[in-house]
Image (cartoon, rainbow, N blue to C red; front, top):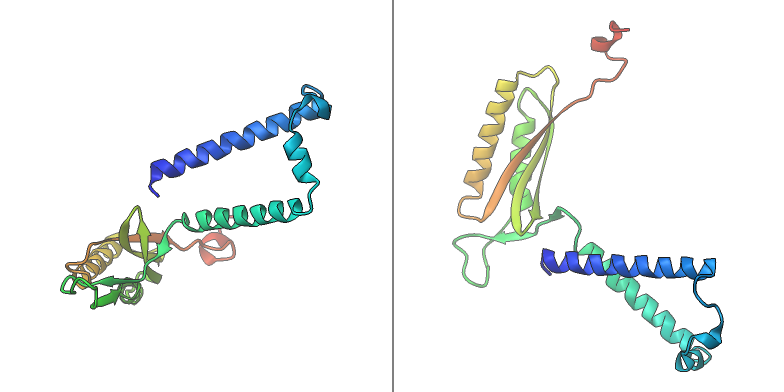
Length: 189
């Protein structure tokens, strides 16, 4: 489903839930009639007294919960990506490569650089695009020019490894937070 349909469905469900909530509130406060004779729904009252009614309502509830869970799982952000076909592959996609492995190898290489504390790589799908993503933690005292050079070299490495594939790449840099017991902050009290 595309984004417009998702937003329309979410808006309609939200409005429905608001209306039900307001109706229940109004009924509880006495703004709506609570006499069954004023509300004409004899078929619904007859059905609710049938032996099959509880089973039907229970089954409908289970189906709605499963549909809701499937919808939520289908919209998780940054879902992992499986094997991607190589450009030289035939139409059946016989030649494939694990995009997460490409990102992991590049992250391992980046983690071996002097100013990098750690790095993790993965492939994610965002808005229909496969992205090779590396999240690296840098030393707070690191030379940022050197870190930038390392990131550029790693980005080139990703681009070479994924040449011909329809993927994007990004490198996210974070710094290590210093603890309050570290020597750099001990004298600041």
